[in-house]
Amino acid sequence: MTGVSDPRPTPPHPTTRSLRDVGARLGCALLVLATACGGAEPARRPAYVSRMVFAPPEVDDNAVELPGARRGSPRRARPPSARRAQPPPSDPEIPAPPCANAPKPPSQSHGRATGGRLEDGCLLPRRGRGYVRRNRAGYGTDDMVAFVAWAAGEVARIYPKTAPVVVGALARPGGGKLRGHRSHQNGRDVDIGYFASNNRALPHFRRMHHGNIDVAKSWSLIGALLATGRVQYVFMDYELQVLFYRYLEDEGLDATTLGQIFQYPAGRRARRGVVRHAKGHADHFHVRFTCGRSDPHGCQ
Ligand SMILES: [Zn+2]
Image 1: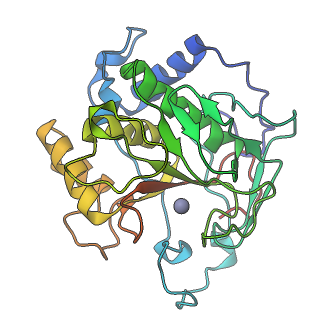
Image 2: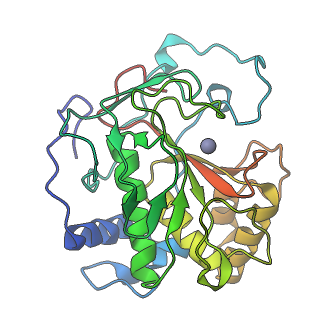
């Protein structure tokens, strides 16, 4: 384990093998079924995708602005003691980020998603295994870029001939206000499309419903992201939550875990679950990551 004050170690150059190992370790840390642990090759669909032990990070709902929340809605001020970064992840195994920009110091996410900035951000390459980025705002924290690239690669490993998923906005270089978004300001937000049925390649985000979405494949991506243990929220249309909830229920996921993951069926205003409804998220989902080890004190 690495202490909070330890400098971030220089990660080794990632290889397919090491990423797979990371995946297996993450899986081992989070699995209910231990079938993929102990060095065994993961099953075609890793168990963590549908059977993870999900430990949502401690979040203060008052500190999080949901997309679509009324501008200027009252928020309780938090005491100074609460203004600190999330604790570092318990598993220090994070894949090296495949940054497309020049070598740089570790990224730092400052302030809030709706009013922060990003220092030394990592540029997610335009294309990678399992994804294509369609938005110019491609900067994020090192951890977020690493996780997104890793998770998309996991889907491509599970579905070798898959069409790539569309990745939309991350943040601008340096973060700050991004046109068309309230958040995406400190490098810990990313918009990602859903996978369409019949392996149809989508050139951009497409509004999804039960008739055109590949629920299993889309969940393999969302589940991999959640398995990192570093997702604070996933914003997703409530109607789509129903599809994923039922899919996982059919897969045998227990009600307690389902309740930790989804806001459904408590209603679209319920402050419950990591997957929350937010308007405008039927054609993509929005992932907000927690602060990481290299983030400063003011990361919220
Ligand atoms: Zn977004």
